[in-house]
Image (cartoon, rainbow, N blue to C red; front, side, top):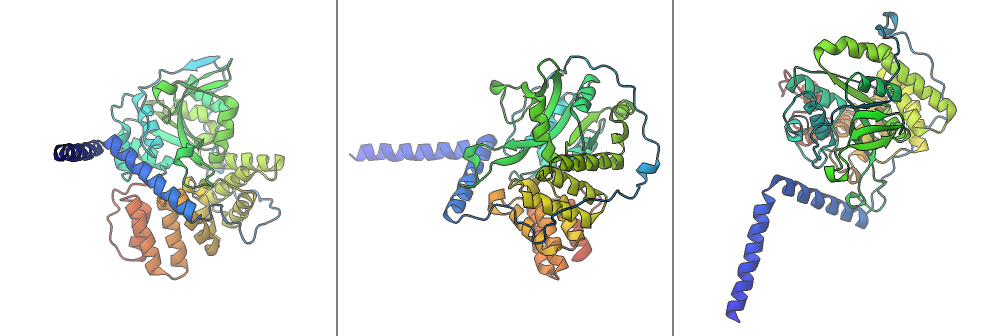
Length: 422
């Protein structure tokens, strides 16, 4: 009996030791920590459900007709030359890169890694993540952060991102040999839901490297699916356009410096950032005319009005978007509402939507929401609360430039911003 008990104890100790050793493997450690975070968050939200819907603005506007913008510097300059449109080939298939399945919260770095491989880069998603999202739980990577990495760590390349993309533009870039990264709406797996009322909506990056006119499909590399599930995935034109809309049809193109004139000619007037945003504003207005209850169109309109610093009009548009209803995680990925409500002095609502953004349903890792919540508290005179928020933001994203700058400007000079990252 004693011998049997000893064998059982040794076996248990061996299993425990094996578990410790396996936990040292980064991929296993990452997934176990992810499951622990999801399960604990789900348990909390099941026992004590949080309010997960975005609060309705207290002063929504029934109607809104924006005025034409004041002409910008760009509007007074001649538009970049545009090549005469040439017929597109019926099919384009740029050689697919070696596939890389994303780690937790890593679709941005994994998608960028695959794209850079098409230009001879030899790193991995982890090299990218170490610089632009060193904390694994950081849920979001902005296009500015992707571009920062390209310009600073793959310096032989250039990159630009714009909004108001079209299916035709994607095809013209592909036909000229340029793969394109787009940001689209996605859906998390049910097993990763943060609570019983999770709408499962999230953001996702895709690499597009081909199209087929006969099938009406794009060829994409989707880092959420391994090679065994379609490394070369086909997405119908109509589906991509629908999922692209919540992100204002954002796209990024990477190119060699000597090819800039060609990329500029393909983009035409959209090469100029101001003219591009005006184009996006016009597209949003047209969509609202077609469907006055289109929440994504109102959100896109508010974003572009914010870009042009027309904050009072922007918050009216955002009021409409939030009133008609947006996904739970919308402001985890897009932050124009924070700028707009702050600058329009709608501080109480700014505090509401930022608190919702970093609430448990969103994983509590949202440095941008913490930054703007801090600014909201600062506007109310709560300097200690603002500092606490900005320090929390730096824990989510170490070296987060905007939080460091806020502390330097409003608390005391603390950080060297010389080599500040986004």
